[in-house]
Structure formats: structure tokens, C-alpha cells
Amino acid sequence: MKTAVESEGRSRSIRLWITSGPGLFWIVMFLLIPSAVLLGIGFFSADDYGSPILPLSLQPFQQVAGFSLLGWDDGNILIFLRSLEQAGTATIVSALLSYPIVFFIMTRDASIRPLLLLFIVLPSWTNQVVRTYAWLELLGPNAPVSWLAHWLGIVPPDLGIAPGSFAVTTGLAYNYLPYMIVPLYASAEKLDWTLVEAGRDLYASGFKLFWHTVFPQTVPGLLSGVIFVAIPAFGDYVVPQLLGGDRALMIGSLIANQFTETPDWPYGAALTIIMLVFTGAGLVAFRVLTRKLGGSGEATI
Amino acid sequence: MSNVVPQRMRAVLAGISWPVYVLLYTPLALVAYFSFAPAPNAMGHSTYAYGVLFHDGQVFVALQRSLILAVCSATMSTCLGTLLGYGLCRFRKPNARGFAANIPSLVIYTPIIMPSLVFGISELIFFNFVHSYTGLLGAGLVTMVIAHITFQVPYVALTVFARLSGLDPNLFEASHDLYADGLKSFFYLIVPVVQPAIIGGFLLGITLSIDDFTISFFTAGPGSVTLPIYIYSAIAKKGISPEINALGTLMIVTVIVLALAHFFITRRRDRASQLPV
Image (cartoon, rainbow over all chains, first blue to last red; front, side, top):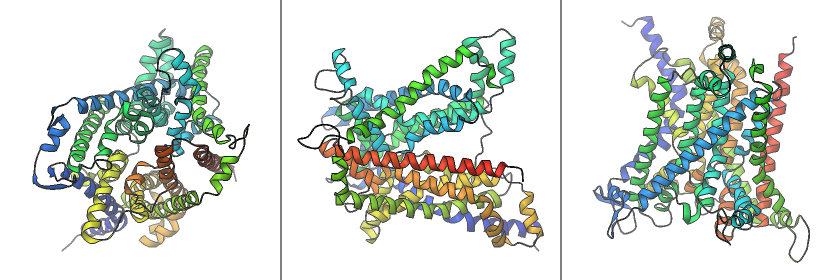
């Protein structure tokens, strides 16, 4: 005999499956299974057309490490390091810019704060291709900024700042700055200002006051911002493609090439696996860090 | 509250922030500026590029495809996402622990966390396999709609979930006491209450769809060039031209106008609803 609680529980889970089943099924069907297939391909051999064939092999990973018929080559490792460096710099730049901007907005009149925040987010709602190639107008070979750089001897004549790695860093920071500002703003809004006053009463001032009263309270926002910026910046495709050219190849373009221009699916899949391992390790590290620093309490499903 | 920040500090904050605001809009403004390039064999600024653009049939077809893609995918993802957010908020066992209870969250967060390049390539390979084995789902507008739905559903679900979890649970009890069954309470309680979140989710879906390039690029077929793909391949082939700048300007202006309109309309509505009755 079933108890009322049991049948209540069963009808509850049936309703759960009816309502959330289709959405979850959709994501599993059209994202989880495809990405599992992609990761699986990394363990196959490649035929002459770059398609995966049996037998299973670890050769794609050797290719990732830089081994080929011609011997070892440090190209891939350089590309990985460059991607880490680009994503890291973009993240640091946007974090450093975000603090002044967030507190600039916070100290304004409450009625214009939403508008100021909107103007930060607005550019990121335009299409990524448009807002990225827009930087070519500013940093391209014929732009005034490039003449200046040329005159200062930073870039050779007839070449712009873009394409190049400085342009990529700028483009990445520009693209992902709002993703840092929004979570930081959310945690700054909840800031307990009495702590800051207490710090002031204890004669702390300037950087010390900020570091001991404001900063610890905004760490959760900062850490989610770091995740929102670093992960997409690391694997970005559009920015290095449009602003980097051949001089600043990043992991994203390298992966994409294995599926478009010179197909080698297993190699591309192996590169993807390594990239996801990096991303996942970063995520886990930050999750641990956030928990240690006591950052939680966002509304999560 | 924030009056703790001294005047001198506020000046420093403003001194850093205003230049960033200017820098955020400089590239976009330059796109607009260069779109008014002079006509061939002429001097001064002109709207020549816009004239060329409006007579370009390819652009209109691409625009049409972008709009179809955005509206279709946002509609579907709003339906799926609303149900998903509603179900997870209402019917999940409270305080459930363990791996199995966390599966829905994991599934929902994957599309958000996954780098869009990996997302796009996964879809490319999957649709490629499906097509070569069954002959269905050749790369084109349909595969793009499917991919766009996939990345929009979690955002809609999170929006709806956030709205519902802020509600007083007694509302559900009350509707139950008034003999509303599941369906009735869904249509007479949930839908009206969650309506702003549903509309917000739909608009978010449209924005995400229009903003996306990478996932579209890898799921598109030869006959499904949308506006961003058109711009990208035009730049890759011929570099930036006044026509591309004109097209970019129109896209930027559309987004800014729509966003500002949405902002001021919702703000007025919020204010109106705060008035004491």
C-alpha cells in the first residue's frame, strides 16, 4: 500500500519531468551528446581527409604536444601560452578598470545609476563581429593611432597596431569588460558601508581602507567576473581572427582551422580536450577559492 | 551609505571612468563616421554607401534570415525555458542532495559555461554525422535555429526561475485552496505573474541570437548566410568598405535604440506600479 506522501512525491516528479523534461532533453540532445562526440573523436586516427577512422589512437594528443612527421615543434605550446597570456591580461585589465567604474557608478545619484550601468553593457549587445572589427578602424594600418605608434617606433611603417597581439588584448578586454563590471556591481551594491566607516574610525585610509574593508566584500563578484571574462576570452575565436591575423594566433583559431581550412578532426578534437581541461581546472580552482573566501549566496538553480 | 567616499576620491573615480565610457563608444562612432565616406570621384561626406547598401539584394536576404533565426529560436526557447524554470522551481524536491539532484543544474549551466567555439564545433560535427547517416538536418537555417535554441534555453530558464523563486510560496497554496489544478494554476497564476520574466527572456533570446557569430558560423550552410556571417566574410575577402560600415552602423543604431527604448519603457512602468493606489 502506498502512503499519501509517496504518491504525492511521485506526482511531483512526474510533473517535474513533464515541465522541465523537454528543455533538459533539448540541451542533452543538441549539446551534451554532440560535445561528447567531439571529445570522443580526439581518440581516433585521422584518414587522408582528416575524418576520424578506427583504430583508436593517442596520436592526436602527440600532435597537440608538437610532435609530427617532421619532429618536435614548439608552435602549439607557444600558442597555448599566448592564449593564456592574452586571456590573463584581458582579465586583469578589465578587473583593474572595473573597480573604479563600479564605485564611480555607486557614488552617483541613485536615479542615474541604472542608466550608467546600461551604457557600460550596451556595446556588448551589438554583434560581436561588428564591435570587434570596429577596433580595426581605430588601430588598423591607416588609423591615426597607428601613425602615432609608427612615429614612436612601436610598429614598423605600413603596418597597424592591428593586426597584432596588442590589438587582440584590447579587443578581448573591450568585449568582456561588461561581464566583469556587472557581477562586481551586484556585489558592491550589497556592500556594508558601516564596515568602511569602522575602518575609517580605526584610522585606516586610502588603499589600506579599500583593501581591508571594501575588497573582501567584493571578492565573490570579482571571482565570478574573472570566470565570465577569462573563460570566453581564452577560447575566443572572433577577436584573434579579426584583430590578430597570423601574428597573434590563439588556441581558438588553431582549433577552428582543424575543422574548416585544413580538416583534421581528431587533432582539432584533441586540442579542444586540452583547452577544456585548462578551462575546467580554472573553474574548479576558482570554485574552491570562492568557497574559501566565503563567497556564496547568489540565486542559483 | 556611499557618502563615505571622500570628494577627492570621487574625482579620481570619475577621472578614470569617463575616459572608459568614451573609449567604449569610440570604435562604434568611428564605424558610423566612416560609413559616410565620399562617393567615388567626389569630395566630402555622403550617404553614398547607404545607397549602395539598400540596393544590395544579398544584404536584404541576410537580414531576413537573421530576423527569422532570432524570432524562431527565441520563441521556441521561451516556451522550453519557461517550462524548465517553472518545473525546477515548483516540482523539484526541496533540500535534495547528491549527484542525481544536481543533474538538472549541471545540464542548464553547460551551454552557458561552454566556450562558444567548442559549442559551435560540436554542433557542426553532430549535424554532419546526423546528415551523413540519415540525410536529415543538412547545414542551414534549421540547424542554426536548433543551435540558437540550445544556448538560449538556459538564460530564459534562469530568468523565469529567478522571478518565481522570489514569489511568496503562499500564493501557490492559495491557488490550490481555491481548487486550481496544475494547469489552471499555471495559466491563471504563473503566466500572469511571470509574464515580465517571460517577455524579458524572449527579448534576451533575441539579443543573444543577434549578438552571436561563432555558433552561427559553424552551423550555417552555404545557403544560410546571416548578417554577421555576411559582414565577417566580406571583411575577410575585401577588407572594410564603406558599405560594411554603413551596415554596421545600422546594426549598432538599431541595438542602441531598442535597448534605450526598452530601458525607459520598463522604468516608466516600474515607476507607475510603485505609485500608491
